[in-house]
Amino acid sequence: MQGKPAGLERWEGKAVYLNFWSANCGGCLAEMDTLQALSQRWPDKLVVVGVNTDPEQVDIAPLLAKHGISYPVLRDQLHITQDRYQVIGTPTSIVIDARGRVRDLHQGWRKPEELQAVFTRLAQP
Image 1 (tube, helix red, strand yellow):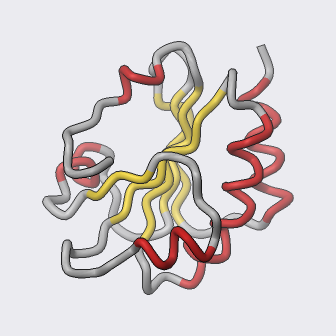
Image 2 (tube, rainbow, N blue to C red):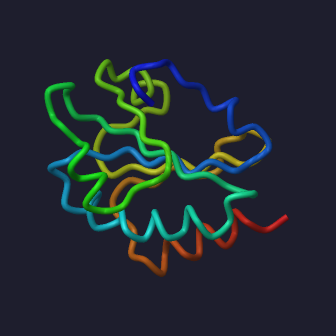
């Protein structure tokens, strides 16, 4: 988000799917297209937020363009967010409900049908 600090409060009232990823992670890249599609399906109920863990010198813009990523992507080079959520590898996903409560932490990549099931549950009232 262009070098500016960002907090989850900007998406208050929506479920948040935090996806920690890195450019050299095959599982991370495998999830991107599905996450992009799902981020468009319920925009009024949930948001995907990508959190890139690569050093600043890694240019992620070409990857984001290649996958047509339009959901917010944050950089966490100082590992502040990773430390807060105890992320030890990528991909790691954290589900935060619309009330701001952490509901799930998943390490490793998810198949498209698994992601679909997670997002369908998140979109339920």
